[in-house]
Image 1: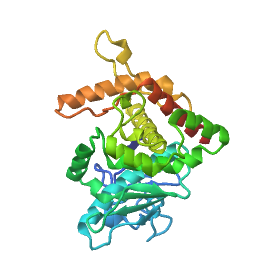
Image 2 (image 1 turned 30 degrees about the horizontal axis):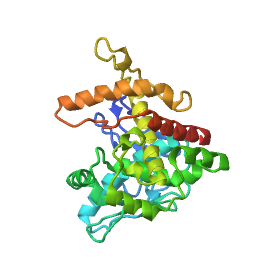
Image 3 (image 1 turned 60 degrees about the horizontal axis):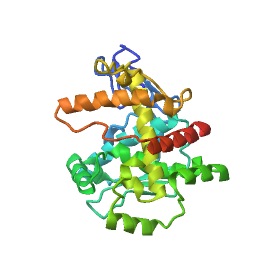
Image 4 (image 1 turned 90 degrees about the vertical axis):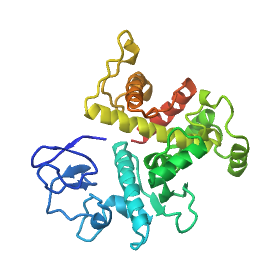
Length: 322
């Protein structure tokens, strides 16, 4: 994420802010210009009052670009669902900003943000439609599911990054040459999905899964391996861009030059492999800081050679599309 300042007083502001906390001037994100403006005369998104969306609209009473992509959301009289919807929209706006930074198209992408308090909801993707169970916005519920599923990491943003990974498979893997490359790396996505699903939940991941996969869930099917790895590429891009914007520099412990990390960015200039040394130094430091606060590792992943190969392939396909 980029860093932002108030256009009136120069105060540091953030992507999600609706006003400057120093001077009180309203802030709005212009999706066409990709800038956070201090322009009180610009029309706000029609969802501003309901969920605090800070997007700017073309005309008064209209939705901003991000909110227009939501096809279904909770009813106005569902106070709990509205609160959960607001959390999901914040995560979605950040996702859409990053997709724009990477030059990835969003034509054909839409979202159903549904509450499982009223009917069963399965988070997933089908033909460009991402469905999200809004129960995932509740910290306690999400943590319970994370523990039940044996996952080291589970967030709203992570779910969305994974599901749009399915959407971008046919966008990025659009030639016979690219399909051959991806199948050689991830396996054949045409393999029977239901059979793979039944096998995964009956037997679990293989004992040595961490040697070749970024997560246990990625072992289930080549399509899920692709989506999990795609989500991880987005994790890397967003975190490294944020580190660069804030000038984060890690010297590393004395005598460990391998854990030095400069503020780097990977969009457009440097391949993914070239910045992973910086990524290692940064994540070691972040994990150590988290442990000092009594939390689990902020970055609970191990990037092995085969995993790096998959990350690099997807990053290269994204760069070619850009």
